[in-house]
Figure 1: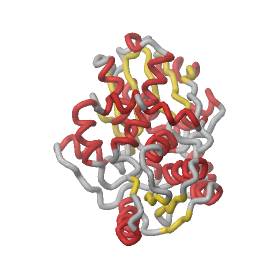
Figure 2: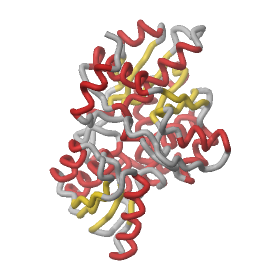
Figure 3: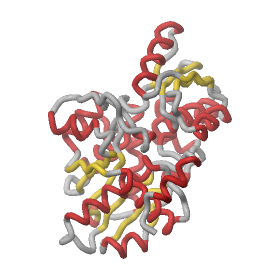
Length: 319
């Protein structure tokens, strides 16, 4: 069912274009493998989440929608609503980076700030949805959202022969990105390894998969704010149990190093959540150094960086 929904998600291309799959020569040389990055920063919203947002909105009739988001999904919903002649109400945590709040405002979304985590913001969105009878759009625990995200894998496999890909690395928060990518990929090429990467202080999916039940974190780390989630979705959890080959936890310093390395190759400064994937790949190959000359894909999932983090990222890299 999900695979076929991904195949049918062509309507998103009315507003977005296919993103590049770019070879990373410096990273590839360092890790002695062929590394490609899927440039999801190339969307106008600078994040992959526009895919799921468009696919979901194209499948609902209501003119006013509500969602909760730590930033990138909120931007995508407000942008998509603007072009689909809908209105959006967005509940965001109070500690959301200003760049993401400004993006929502620029696209016409009505913002409500609530709590200091996604989960607290979502509770407020649920309350408003019930009070005003507006449809509530979940940023990751929704089949239409997941199917939209799965179009990333369609594009990757259009650009590179699946038989030549050793593995795909995805940032994981609630699990919506890796669920879509893994379902499409594993359906066609079950031998491609799917790896999830999380900040070690925000690893709800890792813990949930280890314990085979949904785990809630009391205080997830906010450094990688774009994927700082207390509890994965039940839908995404079931898909991840089936499809993920390995979860890799990375530190703040490892993420900062990945941001620097990607910048040297692409001249783009990705946000920390956007490159948990690359940090995970580098860590994985460091501990599996017999793997050489294989093709790996990392998803560069977003580049809405809080400017105030630039100096911190620089200070946590090797000069």
